[in-house]
Length: 196
Image (cartoon, rainbow, N blue to C red; front, side, top):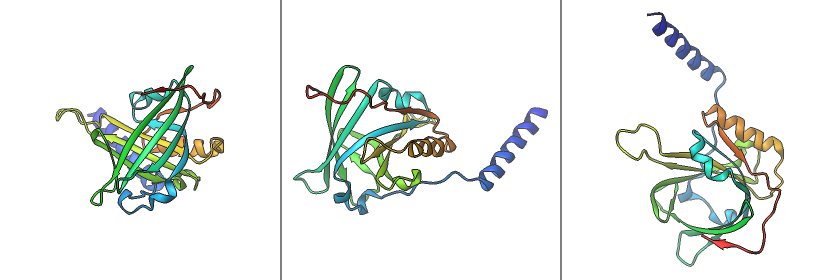
């Protein structure tokens, strides 16, 4: 009985706290109404957050990463090419994204269940930033948690103000995304690449 009362009081406290000090909510930039021209060009991958370490584990060994976003000859299709430094290797990888008129997210070629949402960088005080949210549903009907849920911070410049990264981490933690990694960006990229 005491356990139930204590749980109830904690729940009420959490709801009251959330009402008085709500987490800042990011602004969704619906892909189907976005002017993609303003997002073309070079973007630096700065940091990532997730609900679990498994959501961002692949970025832990990464030193730096630069993305180039381009339109393709196919209407409403974007190509993102990444140059990544992982350990002593420089890797190159390309993804194709489709903008569908009936969807507010980007569809990733080869990953039909993944949703990629675009959020405004204003959420972290950085108008020259964007945040991509990648979500994949649970692998089975018996699982209640998404199999992937992470936010990725990108900026037009590699030397983002530390307050932007701090705001990204704090705002994400307020929304229970507590696993965090920031790329050190100390080694740079080489001209020799392995293509994935």
